[in-house]
Image 1 (cartoon, helix red, strand yellow):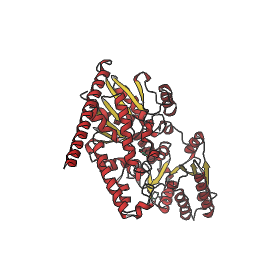
Image 2 (cartoon, protein in one colour; image 1 turned 90 degrees about the vertical axis):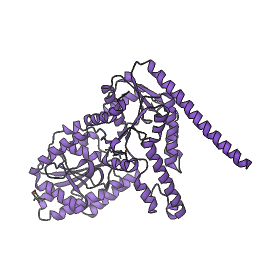
Image 3 (cartoon, rainbow, N blue to C red; image 1 turned 30 degrees about the vertical axis):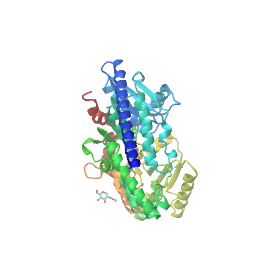
Image 4 (cartoon, rainbow, N blue to C red; image 1 turned 120 degrees about the horizontal axis):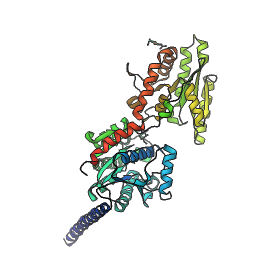
Length: 475
Ligand SMILES: *[C@@H]1O[C@H](CO)[C@@H](O)[C@H](O)[C@H]1NC(C)=O
Ligand SMILES: *[C@@H]1O[C@H](CO)[C@@H](O)[C@H](O)[C@H]1NC(C)=O
C-alpha cells in the first residue's frame, strides 16, 4: 500500500515537473522571441532549418532558391538559417551557393545560427532503432536551434518532422516544411509484414515471428507519431508525385499538402543548338553505373532493335548507343566490365560505346549530336537526368514507372513529349518509330523542351511562395 502511494506520488511529481518545465521553457522562449523583435520594428523573423546547408546537393539548391525568393518577396523578413556546418563561415557558405548553383542571396539579410549538436542526427550513431534515434536526435538539435533563436516562422527544408511540435508549441511559431522523402513508408511496413529481407529488415528479424511482430508494432507506433508531428506543420510541400503519394498516405492532410518540384537548372540546356549528323543515329544514356539503372535492359533493347531491323542492314549500321556514366568505386567498374562483356556476348560492340567519367563539355557535345535519350531504371522517384535530356532536345524513351510516368513524360496525343516503355521489345519499337518517323518528331521535341519549364527555378519560386504565403498572413 505504501509502495503504491509512493509510486503514485513519484509519478505525479514527475508529471508536475514536466508540466512546470514546459511552461517555464515556453515563457522564457516567448520572452526571448519578443525581445528579438524590439530591435527590428515590425519585421518577421524566419528561421530555416537545414543542418547540412553547405553540402552542395539538390536539397541545397532548394534551400538557396527558397531563401532568395523569400528575400525578394518579403523585404521586412529577417532570415536565419540553422546549420550544423560549424567549420564554415557565413561568407564561404554563401560563396559556395553562388559558385555551385549560381544563386546569389542578399548577404545582409541572412544570418546563421551554428548548431553544435548536429552529431545527434547522424544515422551512424544509431545502428538499432535508427528511425527513433534520429528522430529524438533531431529534437535535441531542434531544441538547440529554438533556444538560440525562436522565430515567428519556422521552415524546415530537410524533413526533420520531429522538430515541428517544438517550434509550434514552445515558441508558437508558424511551421512550414519541404519534404524530399518520407522517413517511413508504407512499403517498409509491407516488407516487414511479409517478412522480406532488406537493408532495413535484417535476416534474423525476417525469420523470427516474434521479432517481426515487435518490429511491426514499433513501425506502426512510429508512423502514428510521425503523423502527429507532421500535422503540426501548417503548410507541407513535397518534391514529387512519389513523395506526395506517400505523405498523403501517412499524414492525410491533402488540403495542406502542395507539390512543389525542386528547381532544376535547365535554361542553358534549352538553349543548346542541335547538330545531328545525318548518317548516324545516336541514342544517349546518361547515368551512374549503379545496378538500379538497369543498363543491361538498354543493351537488350538494342539487341531487339537489330532483330526489328533485320531487313535494313544499312540503317542498323547507323545506330549507336552511347552509354555515358561515372564510376565511383570498384563495384561500379566491375559492373562496367560486365556490361562490356554482355555487349560482346550479344555482338553489339560495333553499335555500343561506353564513355566513362566524361567532362561536362563533352557531355554537352553529346547532347547536341544525339537524337534519342534512353532511361531504363524501374520506379525512379524522379529522374533529373530525363529532364535534362529533354531540355537538351533529345526524344526520350523512359521507363514506364515512378517519376518518368507520374511527373515527367506525357504520351497522350496532342501533348506528347516523349515515350515510355517497360520491356526490351517495347523500347526497341519506340526507338524504331522515332528513327523511321524522324521528320515527325519535331513536335515532340519542342513539346519536351517546353515542358521542362515546369521544373525551372522560376516555377519553383512561384509555387514555393504560394505555399508558404499562409505562414505570412496575420503576422
Ligand atoms: C525528391 O527527393 C528524393 C530524395 O532526395 C529524390 O530521390 C528525388 O529525386 C527528389 N525528387 C525530385 C523531383 O527531385
Ligand atoms: C510511323 O508513324 C506512323 C503514323 O504515326 C505509324 O503508324 C508507324 O507505325 C510508325 N512507324 C514505326 C516504325 O513505328
